Length: 426
Image (cartoon, rainbow, N blue to C red):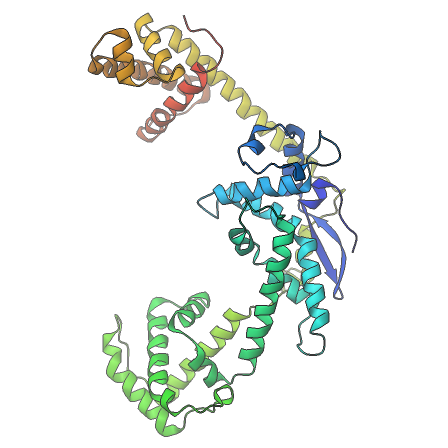
């Protein structure tokens, strides 16, 4: 496996396996562009890195003008932890960078464990790698960002534990018969497995009740050899069906009476869903997308040297448009402020530039606080009207009630940004 040294490559490329060997690195273009854009605008003195409070002397490379992979990993780890929604674009981007960064660490953890268990368990290197790398969010959540050790060191131990736990549990459950597995399950785990299989609530409730009746009547007869527990006999199945039919009226949708054969089939579905949930199949990137589409999933990943010029041009154009609109908005807002009465301009400066409270402004100007509040509201109303008219004429935005609410909510932020800039307000 070729080792990565370039920062852009470290945070945007992923391992490609072929015949259980790491063949090469493939690039995610979106992540690559994001890394390149970040590196162009960031230095060791960048305030965004200072805000993380994670910079130490160990984060420096030989050159004081460049970032190390440790500092960059800490930066994206901090960004990921800051996001309250794991599915937000920022969180997903940070997670993508960190998943790429930890590819080598995960590979070597999987490599050493598969070598140690060779001949004992039928799990290949690529399987163990995929099992561990899928748990990157869990690894990131468990790592203390202020710990002096590096993310790679922590992840190496975490990946090893994840793979060992998987192999241990897999071996335990693989040795269980279907009925032994059902008796080892908790209600919570079974519910998660059935939900993951796509069952609706009515079907799920029926299967859980059937499992509960099975556990109630079959548990007392279990032997020390639970792993190889045989299926219940006909008499036990009849008793399970009777108990189910008596308790099904507790369900939101009771449904029809269940026969012993139906209950046995339902519990078989529970076993199948549980095994699929606990040990999902690991698919290769080389498999076709569908029967009708013979292209492979790995075709979506391209070589590092490939470029998507059209996409880059569109992205750059969108960025330029947004910057132009922001400049126009700032200019329009400054012009609107300049048309206000001098006393209203003074209030805006005190409130947004000097960040005084209404009470402090009232004391400084020698006027009642309610007067300050009323005049600030009047100034905001005038500015809101001016911005709305400009957006309708220049940006062709219809001033609906929702649009007005959104502009009103953002107006404070815009005023703070404009009035905090070193531009004198008359």
